Amino acid sequence: LMHITHVIRAEEHLSNTPRQLVIYKALGFEAPKFAHVSLILGADKKKMSKRHGATSVQQYRDMGYLPDALVNFLALLGWTPDSDQEIFSRDELIEQFTLDRVAKNPAVFDIEKLNWINFHYMKQLDEDQLYAVCLPHLQKAGYASENPDETEAAWLKAVCAAMREHVQYGAQIVDAAKVFFTDDYAPENEETAAVLKEETAPSVLKMFRDELAALDDVTPDTVQPLFKKIQKGLKVKGKFVYMPIRVAVTGVMHGPDLNVIVALMGRDKVLQRLDKICG
Image 1 (cartoon, rainbow, N blue to C red):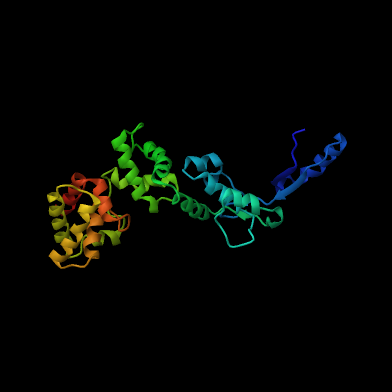
Image 2 (cartoon, rainbow, N blue to C red):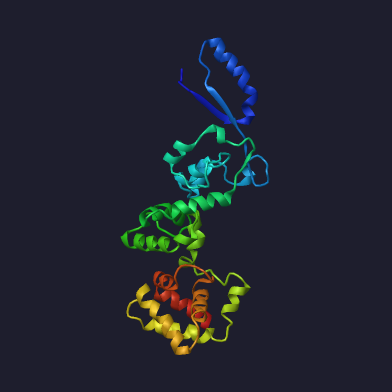
């Protein structure tokens, strides 16, 4: 009566099928086609459950995974395309999917693969779309107001854009961008802390502090020339300029372009952090 033509479900329901077919026959209905697919297992090769973390589509949506990415990922769980292609549009999946290429062996839910696929889709978003995905997580963390005004929204959008290469799914923006919102930071490890102990670090930080304080306007374009100026003035190589400044300002050795970070963070906060390090 519901005009169902195909029933595709987990192999656990194999034992139900014979009695259901008998019921269809007894009622004079045309039986749908039945297909049973292997279970999805966690990385420990056991059936997916709450101990494996998020297990419902709603939870992944709440974490900032994109619908097309999740569809793409789920389609590849147990199904093998007739090529090496891994990124599929929904139309491509509809065109290429066939049950005869569904594996009999259980599929393993690989969160790293999901993150890789979602990251691909995240990179396709324009700045407004990226902001829309990240904003709820910034708000939940207390980093953004409930209804950002035009000025706050523009700044938040720029922060999200700057961190684009470091965010595989929406919720990651909170950790990726926390350096812009909190002063509770420190070098992330011993290797990072060692950068500030290099012989030329104090003079580099002091010169950068003075040059930044003297700028009329702090933008990515006005900050960028300062690094070359310090290189020439102190006769040090580029990494001995960029690294100490990056670690002093962010606590990490890698991230978006340093001139962008400094401009987004603003003169006052950067000077405050440099003063803290320089004493």
